[in-house]
Length: 210
Image (cartoon, rainbow, N blue to C red; front, top):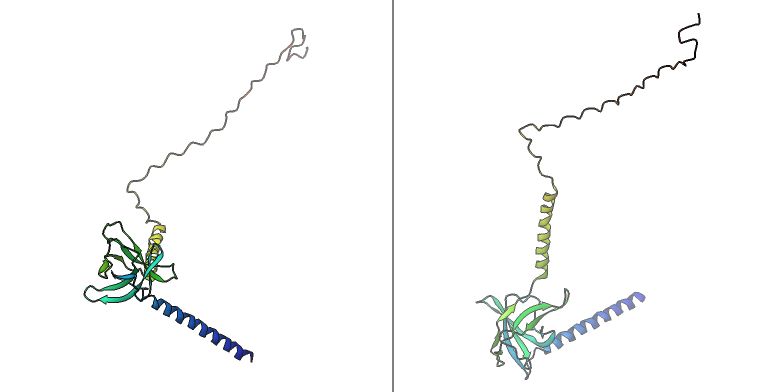
């Protein structure tokens, strides 16, 4: 009985999560509809990985529109995006558009960086952002970084190995002469003092008195 109740609870939780995702998808898709206070701008990218219909278009981190459509140009081999922007944003003609991500695990969006030009992009639907930068594949970037780090190991090993033994010199090398052993210190001989005979001695040395 407890197992069936637990399975029912897990199933209900899965249904609720699926409904939330469905509602979020419909809400994002509804934002792509062009309103009266919006205008369309074209932008060409060489790589739009991570971008889909309904992705955000931000200026200084603030949402300024959405991606309305994504098409491919077979003649130039580029992705052509139609951006739906609010008319309150008047973009200079040297605006830069690039694809960024919210961190490593976040979604991708298109960030616009307005330039300093005096002319603005027309808002009649014929404008185009000419300066664009596509998305960067993080997996490819990490793989290339790892490959570069692995190649450096061989260099490190070769640097640690000692060099080959140097060739022997053709001419003999003169060896220094050995130092002589220190001689023993000379002994000092103290001469013996002569015997002193007193003058009043009647028997000098060697006389037995005979």
